[in-house]
Image 1: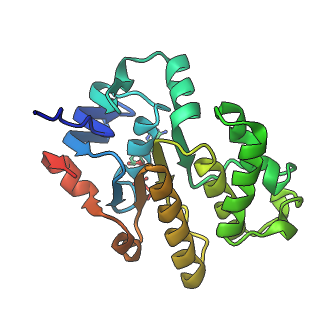
Image 2 (image 1 turned 90 degrees about the vertical axis):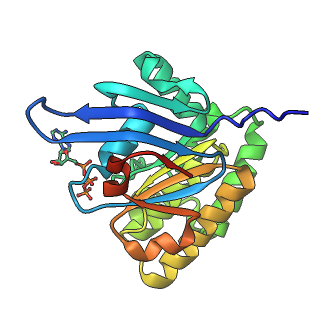
Image 3 (image 1 turned 120 degrees about the horizontal axis):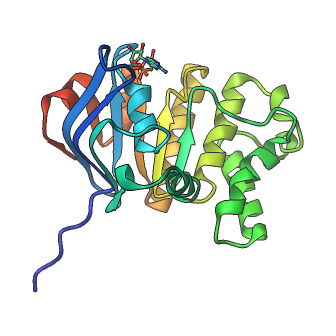
Length: 230
Ligand SMILES: Nc1ncnc2c1ncn2[C@@H]1O[C@H](COP(=O)(O)OP(=O)(O)OP(=O)(O)O)[C@@H](O)[C@H]1O
């Protein structure tokens, strides 16, 4: 019996992007990441990490080349379809956390529940479990997000991103405001929760100490060089 080759979670082919034709360019000849893997991408400031993540979640579109997510051609989808895919299948935590300051901690996490197939009560329980696992127990749930420290807000943003057990989690420097102890706890919970849901993770940072948590580590300069399969 022959087994079908598995479709990668992420596949890039000759990806090219520029903000201005005469300026900086991102070019990734090829990248393939298998489903459920955790990839750490490091790079200096200005090397294109955030740009890459914006392309992967369909916020921006490439000038040339292809982006495939679980066999779907992201580069061919309309803006509306990309938005829908992002809402349903991609958890995103960016440096600007995009929490709603006047909403409670719990309601910020539950913002993604609208995109879930599971009943509201299941989502409510999962939100509470995630917050507790991330070190934000019940005493925090009713507080407005604006009253938390930046490190605590980062944890709320991760709980929100993981609520619907997305197929892909994209994270851009989400630990920048955490001290070493909290950062270790945060990384362990983040990746354990991703594993439970089979979520593929791409995490970018310039903090090389974080790379030990990941199955694979690449530099932006590696990506620019050629075929990389993880
Ligand atoms: N909206 C924009 N318009 C024009 N150029 C931009 C824009 N955003 C980023 N750039 C440029 O694109 C390049 C890559 O930027 P990007 O933000 O992706 O880097 P980064 O690796 O995420 O940096 P950092 O670690 O500082 O966040 C930089 O040269 C930057 O100046």
